[in-house]
Image (tube, rainbow over all chains, first blue to last red; front, side, top):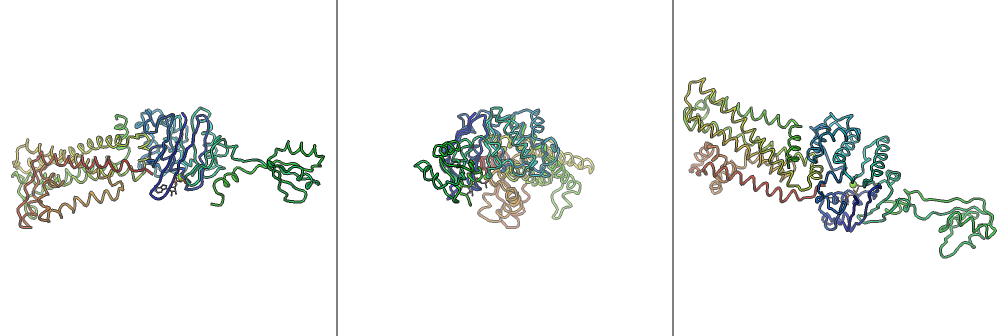
Length: 293
Length: 264
Ligand SMILES: Nc1ncnc2c1ncn2[C@@H]1O[C@H](COP(=O)(O)OP(=O)(O)OP(=O)(O)O)[C@@H](O)[C@H]1O
Ligand SMILES: [Mg+2]
């Protein structure tokens, strides 16, 4: 079941939270939904789920709006940090209420509790739970209907490193199972190793969408050579740009290491060092989302 | 819909709210028993005794005066969804929002009826117990008393609905509780002191309740004090109809307005 977002727009009075946002998320992959604080990630997810009415635009799951799905909680699960628990209910009570409401059967309560580690504190009142425990209980609630699509808004909030690693693995398994996973974060590092695709937004607008590898941008090649001046003169064309940071050092944009080596050989230039340079994904992300903000 | 009803039932029984409701019902019934035992003729100012029709009406009317308790319980039940932000998950599981409100209304109307039946049964039992104990012949036939008690139980169910609707409308639990409490304790009584508005009294929730429970002591007392004649109340069925209308209007507004608001 694919997710399709078309022209989603939301204005809260004078504030444009989301503007003409379109993207897709496919089944079988984890799609990261990235953007700095206030970019509109939460608002977008709330609109996708019908909690917030969009000013315009639509979001569909397998062609249906959330509210029009024949059995919504069995199709789409959501972990939102705006969701709470009745403080006088135990974790188990909470799951039982929503298992009933979604017609998922009480047997499912034990399954999701085991799956998410909620079993360890199922009998405790929700008001006594830690942030990480609440996050797991939210996830357990979202999984009650064994949904094909999972929307998670900053799910690693409050999780310890072990919990984060577990969640990462868990989401990858769910995706490998053919499910559609959309997971938001304002830190790239958090989903860099989980997501296959990314959708990056800033100020409510789409910045880029596609495979995560594409975020790296074009690689550069660093070359150390006693004949740096000569080599630079030979290399420069309309496609190739060369920086010359030190007398013996060149940074070449627009060529692969293989192409640089071949060029050096054909021009008879001596090379002492040839190094591919990748900007880190975090740098790419900061660049895309406006860096210093 | 059965799933939503089952879920609301699970939710209700998962907290101690039902226990407080039960205790409140028993206590308000027992209070009437205590008053009967003391004897209305010994009150200051003295009220007609239990051997008169008026005396029975007044005493049971006092039970009718505790209807704000189930109203508060109804208010707590709905506004808790907003206060504890379970509303998000509830809306995700039941995206057509009126459905879960309808389920809540059904469950809590039942709960309100159970509350009223408990309070009325305890009060009725105590009344007859006191009559036997003191050797009094009650001023009304048993059938009439039972009918009065049934009307009070019904009133309590309607008030639970009203409280629920107020909770859905105002969402903020404290605001909603204050609004409901202030209305029953102050606003309506104050309204009755204004000559023009007094004519509306039969149509206000308190007046309609008085018509339903047959308790006019308060209206009469105020009429005495202000030196005006008491506004005649509606008939009991008309009073019931007015109350139900209030609940329906409140629910309609709750469905039309807040349920469309963004849940963030
Ligand atoms: N209910 C609301 N009323 C008014 N403005 C809102 C509301 N909700 C969000 N906004 C505004 O919309 C913009 C987007 O907010 P949103 O919460 O969607 O961002 P986000 O990407 O989830 O940020 P974060 O990483 O901090 O969670 C912000 O400018 C925010 O102030
Ligand atoms: Mg957010």
